[in-house]
Length: 499
Ligand code: AHR
Figure 1 (cartoon, rainbow, N blue to C red):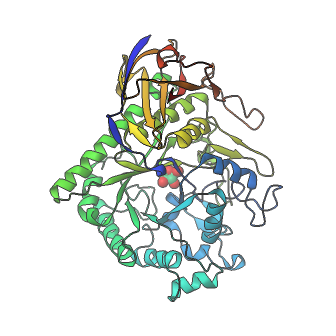
Figure 2: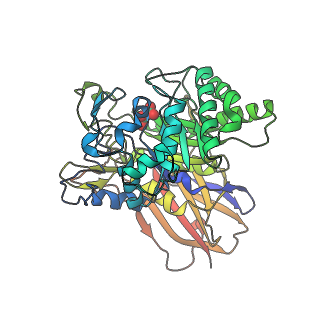
Figure 3: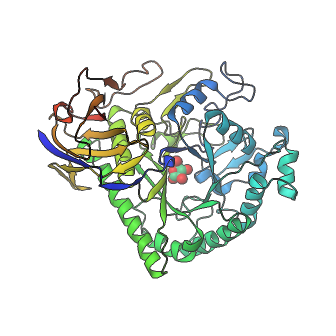
């Protein structure tokens, strides 16, 4: 099937914030214990950090890692996770019905962030706690010294402030599962007052207010409107969370997930703009899509887990090739919304619905979803251009019209390379394009990377870590986009350069 694809240098969506390729690490399951942290492991450094895992995380090039939750944060006393390790209490984590030994805490997270070359995005507990605990935490982390909380940090061995620039005001506060759930008015007021206190401390810190937990929540999007009516002036971002699933085992419907994500973002943008108009606010609200991924493989089996263990194996979804296609599609959506989505966190990073898996005492490996994320994180930085694709598609009852071809386009920061990320959703037809490159007339293909497996359920495991792997090819002579073919059910990245 031949389709037309126009790329115009002037169809600029916006500058892509590098933080679009961020991730998330929660005290949940084996993300921390036997994930990134395993003293005694043969690769562990002096701090107990697994260097084999750190290497893979570094390779993903994630600018921010959101921490420590997630649902975990809503019942978390940050004071338990600082100071001498042997004095820290063991606590019951009600969110995941696990035991939190607090052996890995705040100082350890900051040290690990530096090791893997990322920056922290910290969440404060607005479930069981509030304004006072949040301001104390910010002071502990960011004040140089000369106040009781900052001097406590110094006494704990960290003379330099952590200088954490972005903070989440709670997590999924609309959810009945959340410890300390709030109504939109309760949360909106609390978010406003917490934001005020944090901005009085340092007006340059960036704050994220909680949006709905997912778009099917009965209070969506009224929750967003009410919360922002309270705190619009004091926050910088509104959060979005959404997980995709293939519970119905219906691949074509599953591949429509990105259409649903796109609609979700558009509704949130409209809601923010409505509140801005009502409040006569000139500054548009930016979005932090701080939890997104595929999550469904373990939902049932996790219900049978025995509670109150340290680091139990929870949410250990083994991702397939079709999940990687969906992750590639979701990344395209984020890139196409780069004007408003400034932060996005792949949820999560290690062992828990993660691109990286480990075995306790054993190795670590890359899941299928690692690959589209890796390519987007490495090459999807610069300026997002809106491609115009004239493509037919199929009707999906959940999503409406789902086009066969999905694309996003990125012009590199140096403006010398163009990256076209494409997914062919068709299960039998190869797609080719007739392209119109306006402003890139003499550019041609220098590389084509493909991700495909004949079995949509193929997965990477410790025994077969390379079953689903990208294949890259570089043409020997200048080649036009029109001469490439995009096989059925494939993710592709095409790199073009002026020749
Ligand atoms: O990422 C797993 C969980 O999903 C998070 O703790 C929560 O915020 C969301 O419901």
